[in-house]
Length: 146
Image 1 (tube, rainbow, N blue to C red):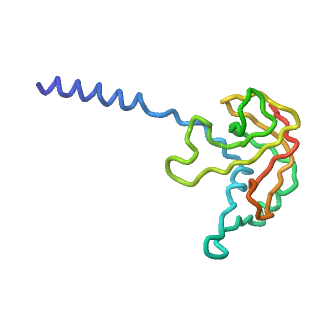
Image 2 (cartoon, rainbow, N blue to C red):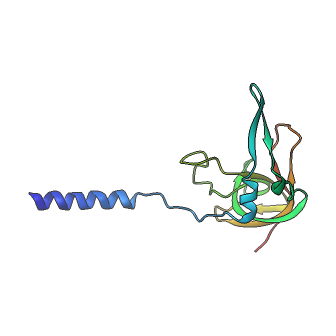
Image 3 (spheres, one colour):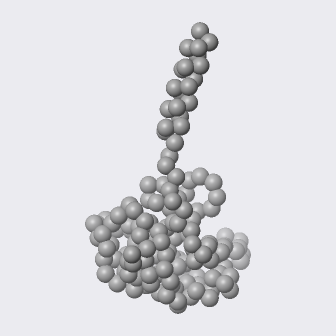
């Protein structure tokens, strides 16, 4: 009886391990780490503003390279505008521990096909510190690079 229980326990634990979600490759780079320095500050009741530390502001209007995953904002097979994240689309960026990862709104020079694989793009990094409700970060005139 003891052996049967151990065998059942072994097979049960094997199915639990097998069902674990595949962990994605970490896409963090020094540039993504700088982007992650942005934080929110409450300036009055129910009003928050984005704060961009000086080391992050130093990237403003510079051409940068970023790896990441495409998050489409519209339906289609090719995209010239999308969000870029360090977390793959099949992973919930709002679930789990830690903070919601940074995302950047991308405006490509020409449309690229959707892929669930990581891509690397290069473009002009612009910080939106106007206080409007658009994205905090843009990558403009972006091109996919190998």
